[in-house]
Length: 270
Ligand code: OGA
Ligand code: MN
Image (cartoon, rainbow, N blue to C red; front, side, top):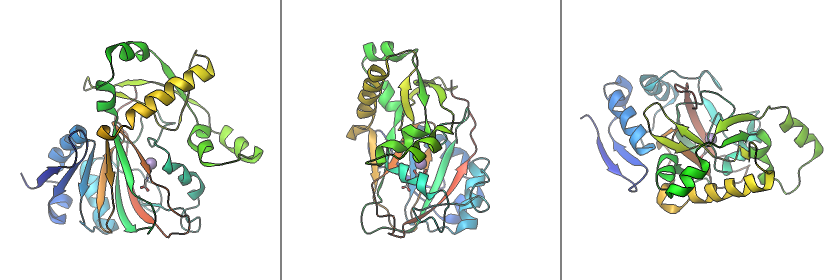
């Protein structure tokens, strides 16, 4: 063992104490991947990696998506830095990344560069535990359901009023149908929800939305959630296939800046 761990809550989150050299060398990569799958997110307090180190470490865990600037996606609400910042306003709603993909990102590695003095804490919820703890009748009720995920779902709740132009923009992104329960190749099951989960196939819209709202509320109960209060230099990996996440609202002009590396998906939703 080349690192030591402390669990942050019983059901989600482990803090990992180690050094940059160990992480970048890849000698702990296999153990860290296993731990990530078990614990949903891993926190590396004040590991303070620069972009090259963060990329090199990420590459020991999987293939890196060529997103942002050479693999570094700057998560900020400042449009001068990240042109797609408008969509990032949706990160305040519980979500998964890559909802429109058949094979969503395996995970992301996020490091804190500039913090906001207001808000900006990130929360993660364990979607495996949320499924496993459902009552048997609920599991039976939802076992075969399929859910349409939409861009409008990820955006509409953050605006008091939606313009026709916004609606038209969101509609340009096709809806994507996914099972409500993801049966992973490991045999474990997780709830596949998030803001993108918009309506249930073959069910009355309102009835389906009410069921989704009930399950979303279930999944964000405190026992499934770890909330991270960032310090500059902290780095977190989340298992995007087994956790949902969201950020607490922060002002768009706060200067908050996180650098994200995203791992290529490895497993199709099934
Ligand atoms: C993301 C995201 C949350 C945050 O990068 O996918 O949702 O805390 N970020 O900025
Ligand atoms: Mn996200």
